[in-house]
Length: 406
Image (cartoon, rainbow, N blue to C red):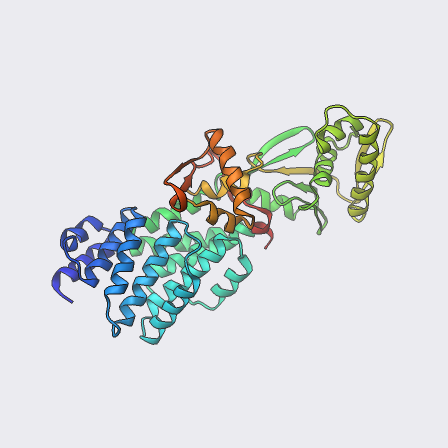
C-alpha cells in the first residue's frame, strides 16, 4: 500500500474526510475509490459513497476477496445510515463469511453488528437479542465496543428497561470517547437524550402530566389498572389484555378509564368509539354488543357495569386507574417516530420497518406532507422523506406496538 493511501486511511480513521480526499480525490485505482467512498459517506453524500464503493469492489481482482468484502460491508453501513433497509442481507452475510475466512475478525464482527442493528431497527427484537448474545465485545477496538453497547441500550429501551439502558449508554460513551470518532460520540449522546425526554402522558382522575421512560416503566410495574395507549393493551396485576386489533374496544376502555370512578354517558361512548355525533337506537344496540365483548375480555381484571346513564369501569383489585397516552396523539405516529431520527427514509423502508404495506405508508406520508410535518426530496425510487424531531419528546413510545412488546 502506497504512502498516499496509508495517509488517507489514517485521515479517515481520525474523522478527517477532507484530508483523505486531498490525497486520493484524483485517483481511480480500487483502494483510492474505496477510501473516497468512505470519505463521501462521512461527508453525508450517501448516494455518491455507495457508487464509489461498488466501483471499488468491481476493481479489486479475484485474488482480493478480502478487499471486496470490506467494500461490501462499507456499502452496507452506508445503506443502513441512509435507511435503505432493502440492502441485500445475503451479500452482507457472504462478506462477513469472507472476512472471517481471511482472519479479519474486527470487520467480520462489525458486519455482524450491522445485521443486528438492522433487525433492531425493523422491530425484530428477539432476533437482535439472540444475535447479540453470541458476541463478546471485549477483544475488539473501542468503536466496536461502543456499537455493541448502543445495541444493548436500544434493546433495553424498546423493552422499557431503563436501568440496563442507562448503564449500557454510559459504557458506550466511555468507549466512544476512547475511539475519538465524533459521529459515534454524537450517536451515543443522542441515544442518551431518550432517557431524559418526556415519553408519554399519564391521565388519571381528570389530571394529566408527562412521564419520562423510567416513570413509564415504574407505572407499568405497579399494581395500577393501566389502559396503555402506546401498546394498545389493558393491564393490571400482571394480567395483560391486548386490544391492538380491536380499536373500538380499546376506545371504549380508554373512555371508561379516563372517567373512572365516574360512569360515561352512552352518547359520549358512541361518539368516542364509533365517531358518530348523534346516537340513535342502532348505535346504542351496537354499543351494548361491544360492551359485552369488552366485559368478557376484561373479566379477570375488571368489571364493566351498566348505569342509568351509561357504563362504568370496576377494577377487581387495583385502587388506581390510569391511562398511559402517547406523547403525540396522531394516526401516523409510527411514521413520525421513524422519520424523527433525522435520517432520510424511503417509503419502502418505512413499510418494512412498520410491518405494513408501502401504499399505506405512502398515504400517511402524503397526509403528513399536506400538513407540512414532513418533506421529501428526489424522484421515483430515489425519493426520500424527512421530518424534524418531535420537539420535547422521545419517540420510543411512538413506535408501533410490536417494537415494544417483541
